[in-house]
Length: 201
Length: 254
Image 1 (cartoon, rainbow over the protein chains, first blue to last red):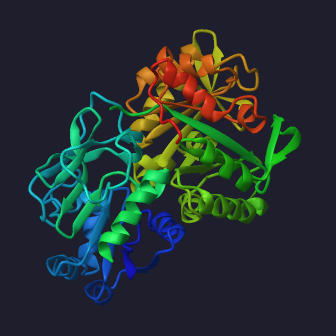
Image 2: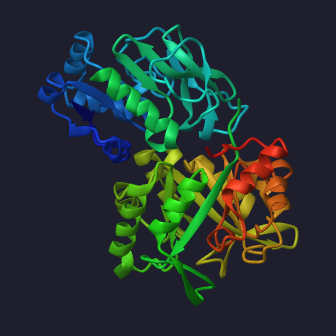
Image 3: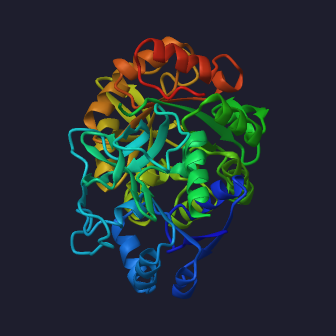
């Protein structure tokens, strides 16, 4: 199996690529609608500004093939902004429309805590998770973000907290997403990516 | 469940090798950056900072190659800096595999650099490095490796940097750097309480209690040190066990 990394010109593609390579997985970068339409598995990385990701999806005409692939059951993993993009809207760019695949929305974390939420934090499992299989319950993952899905639904299988609870791990049929960076989260991050590869195979 | 305090080893390099020395005088070799990075990754470091302290134009390709080699070995975040003056400088460092860049003197000279980097990479990728030195009742920002005063208040500069788009502050006490007398508590605490972003304390660490104090009373979100880790004065693993036993939240290595 070959994982298609959606390369929209920003973000952490190289780190994700390296993390997959360490696991012996094959991956390929692409920003062409045809490649996304024909992918066996998709990974949407992203870090930075929500608007940059959403605009790039539309400017490169990737939205339709991506939604179509997800509708056909192609396994998908969103990382950081790749999770936030699954909601209809984000407070970071209220004028733009997200992919609208999950109920809820992305909002700023409260100003009562230091932002960005930067560093290693733990998860709180809401229900059994396929992505987190074999990951110790007390494991830490690396986060770097100021916005999060604080308005989430039952698709959030694990939450984290920084001033407020937010969706840290999403699982909905073939759609998986994490707010943290598994590619930067040491051993637990590698285990999670390995789980995704197994689920996608 | 809460955000863990981070322990960050720092590799000062001449581009290719890790070096140690004061004020660029009598630099001595302290090892291979990739070997040290691999060791710290395994010992439970939460992040790694790699700085080019020579920051000369002709050594730049060597430094970028060092970042590439280090990044390839790491499964934790990597911050790189030293001599970043333009958006292009930052872009090449991030393309080489760094997750964040630090800016220091160039941002003091031209604060708009912070906004440019923040717009391009996001605030989480922009670390404002401030070298501060006590002068009477306040702290002055120092530039050019801590040698010259910028005649600017460190607290005010920190707040301005955050407004411009910095997502983190790497705060070095020029007074404490190299002394091993402990972190600068009044400085760190004052800056940490004055800004809304995480603060990394740097300069003066030796003992585990220095780290415990800077996290509790000093309100630091992360603590950085170099030679005590390189020289095996302090192991990251034991340091974290010490902190955890004192109820300071840290990510314990497996």
